Structure formats: C-alpha cells, structure tokens
Length: 214
Image (cartoon, rainbow, N blue to C red; front, side, top):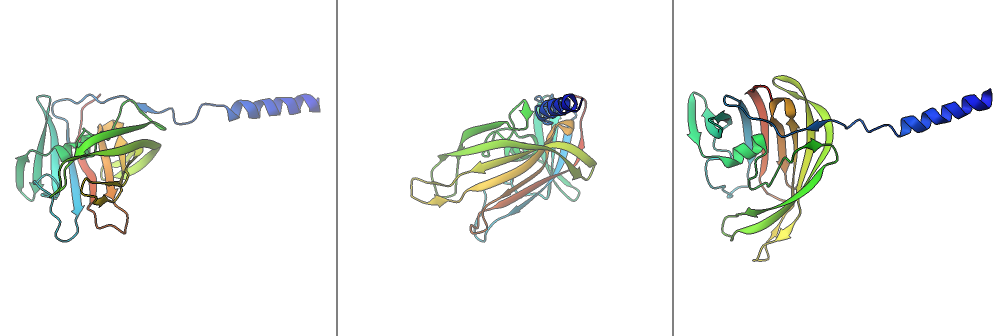
C-alpha cells in the first residue's frame, strides 16, 4: 500500500512538473476603429546642446492619437492649445508602429517571443545609417495606470553599440515598455541609455483612452 501511494505521489509530481507554462496568454493584432483615441504624456531629457529635429518629440507635454477614417491623427496638447501635427514618432510610442525604434510590437504577442529589426537612423551632422535592435516579450504582468490596473505584456528593446562611418561610437540604449491588449496600446515606455552616456532619455505614459471592442 505504501509503495503504491509513493508511486502515485511521484506520478503526480511528474504530471505537475510538465504542465503547460502559465504564459499561455496571447494577443492578436488589434483592430482599430474610428473614434479610438489615446492621450499620453511624453517627457524627454536631452544633454545640453543637443537638439532633436521637429516638434514630434518633446514639443508638447501631452499628445492625443486618434483613429479617424482609418488613419492615425496626432494632436499636440498644451493647456487649452490643441494642434494637429505630423508625428510618426508619437504613433510609434503609443501603437508600436514602425519608426526609428523599429518594430516595437510583433503579433501574435506571447511571452518568450523574440525578433530583431534593422531600420534607418539619422543623427545630426552624420549621414543616415542602418541601426539594429532586438526585441523580447519578457512577462505578462499587471501595471497600474491612471485608469486603473491593466494586464500587459512587458517587452524589452535593446540597441547594441555600433560605430558610424566616421568612427563615432554610439552608446547602446534600451527601452522597457508595456503593451495592454485591452486598450490596444503601449501604456508605458521608458527608454534610457547607460549612466555613463549623455544620450537622450524618453518616457511615455498613457494617461487616458477611449477604445471600442476588438
């Protein structure tokens, strides 16, 4: 009897140890609908003397991204001011669309997914070059937002250090961000360079949204 019980116990342990991982959560590509919108706060820190061309990065404290007739419209918000602008960088921060950070989202998303991308990178005073980045879906977590707690995928983007044609070394940067399928958007992104480098730092936080069903 004892021998049989031990065999059953070992069998149970074996079955439990080979149960599917709890990361079965998977997100398909979202379906955007006219009227969907997201408002984000964007903070940019740059070293003294370094400028970023265009108003699309740090030109306004908040931005509104809206789906209208199947296209993305972006508005810069400051107090009572609301100005429509061309800002693919903001669309990338909110919806993960390809831009100079590459392809931030790749569907279907699931924990453990990895991919890489090459994309053109322009720096002041230097010719355009191709940059390389790697991406990984690291976890399925809960994250607090101004609209309550949301379940989201945690992702990491890394850009390794590489020289330009002028032998200028570019310090590697990394971005940690969270994508919440319920709101079809990246709810938080923090991009930082190593402390030893004065490269720009960017933070994007979703503060409000209005979306229809998938």
